[in-house]
Image (cartoon, rainbow, N blue to C red):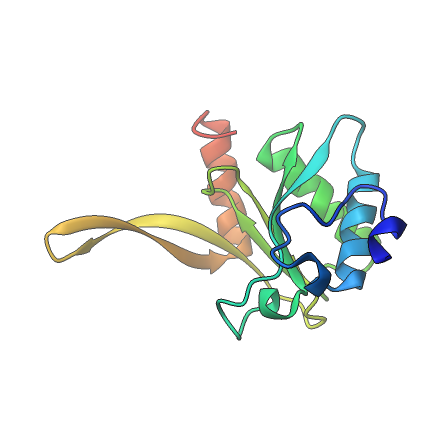
Length: 155
């Protein structure tokens, strides 16, 4: 029934187990999509996931996604402004991920705030170079993302 109240999202997207998604988060994402300029849409990467009990994904209160129709920096601008206009920026988990295949975002209903950037770095393990995701501060991550995308190295 709750899915009929949404305009832009459907249970067949990458929510994991769609019925385990928090309705308040679904409404927030629907409102974010409504706020975007014409031609933009939100592509969900992941919602509910039972792989980490410490994650908000575990209780259906987080989603990972990217915005289709614009670049990462413009999408970040729209998302951050949407959250600020609703006085939520300091309330939700807010992660930026400029190094994903489709650079995107994490929003979680934590209600105590927190922002960060996940970025991939090469590290030496034994005789092999491997890539790991490391977390850095949001401001440092945004500087990194702006340099990456202005240099033509990304979307």
